[in-house]
Image: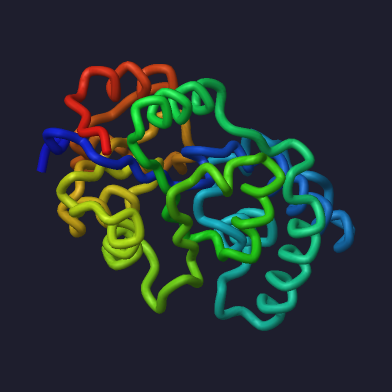
Length: 228
């Protein structure tokens, strides 16, 4: 579908869309590598895989698969390091604060749907002063299903009390576009996010693609909005 007319709510992915969490997640991985006697990997090598979470980063950092022996211990230690350093350098992408403020000024609710578990997402958003501003937070452990399943997005629409086809979902990963389309929401690809080199976002079928948060704000400003 195309962008809804009028637009009643905007939902965002978290990592790589709303918040730049790559510095802290990459730092946690390199600390874990140091504990195993390995050199730090360049930030530029790690950044594209942050949207794939701990497993994606461990694939790059240790060359192991999720089913390999010892992988569970690596995940546990990585998450312990990361959870203790959630918000050292993480912050909203430049321009996202203005986009959120613009929506709030027009009484258009915005929410977050992420595969990041709530026990990490909530304190991160609290430290950034965004949790109380969000109309909803649906984390990766809120429901049995996770993106690319549409259920988390549909649940977010229920929480905000809007119809799915009156929402757009903004994200930087293929699963975000797939989930949005399956939920009958408009989809916007966030071109500033974390896209691995083997992915081509132009083939994902998003309804719109924007290169920067500033471009996202301009796109929103061009949409007919429904205030509540």
